[in-house]
Amino acid sequence: YSINTKHASPYNIALSWALSVYDFKTQFNQFNSVNFPSQTTETPELSSSAVERPKLLIDSEILSKLDIEAAGIFCGRDLINYPAEYLTPFELESAVIALSQDPNLIRDDKSAQVHVHSFIGDDLIQPGQSYYPQVHAVGRAVDRSNSLPRVVWMEYNMDKTELPLVVLIGKGVCFDTGGLDLKPATGMRNMKKDMGGAACVISTAHMILLSRLGVRMKVGICCVENAVQGNAFRPGDVLISRNGISTEIENTDAEGRLILADALVAACENEDEMPDLVIDFATLTGAQRVALGSEIGGVFCTNSKLMQELEKASRISGDYLWPLPLYPGYESSLKSSIADTKNCAATG
Image 1 (cartoon, helix red, strand yellow):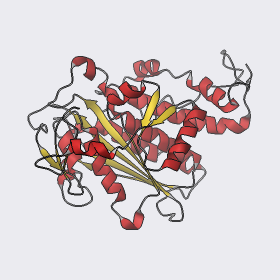
Image 2 (image 1 turned 30 degrees about the horizontal axis):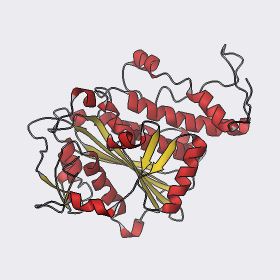
Image 3 (image 1 turned 45 degrees about the horizontal axis):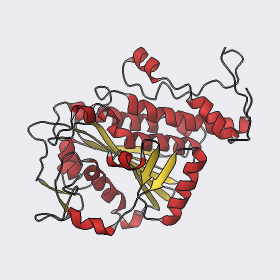
């Protein structure tokens, strides 16, 4: 096959061709465990005569970029597809560590500096840098060490202060029962995917690292299971966030915003190291799907120019985004009689 560029760019056609061979089922049945680096990060052979399959002839100049993007997407897909029994908070942390140790990162750039540090379990309620009290509250109702709540930070190029600082933060709820406000069976069935925000962050970081983009980068992953046990956080509880804001729990199934809040505070609390760009990724609420359907991602953005750039990029890639309002008039619905705010409105 060759490319007809009348209706799409050569790159998008080649990327679609590469992504079409993704096959998680075969990989999972073969290994039956989480393997890092991902076993499916190799892109298909697009022009090898040794493989008896349809072949796509593409310009060699786009092949290296194609390999990086397809590998990153496959990595994200793998993480989302693994059952929660196999992808616990520990395994999600391991995915970040494996990425930081990828030999391809330093193959061509010996100066590349990638560091990972984690805060786990009861360390999250100790004063200091490890203090992420809302992450602990959401994830504490577990009885396996692999499932203990944790916050994982990966840093890249932080010594190169002349470069812009980008912070990517991901919601990593490896399984979401809804907590004591338990989801119905149909709503809980696919909740292994509630770490999709973390998967997108790891996938994006994979592409940034292997592309050698001229940025400093911090990646923050909040890894928990929102489970049910005697010590689970409850409706009506008041949680204190990393920056001291008190939040009354209206519903335990609105947990993603609680864990992200701690990480966002941590990302922006050092005045000497303020980021130039912060993006958090989350499967935050099913209401977004009700509003926009399954093919369009919702975006809250405080920078109109950046939103325009994101929309333009989404149209080019075919992964469409739509801006959602940060409407001040809704703030009153989050008022609490005993705390600074509530984690959701009483109506959901």
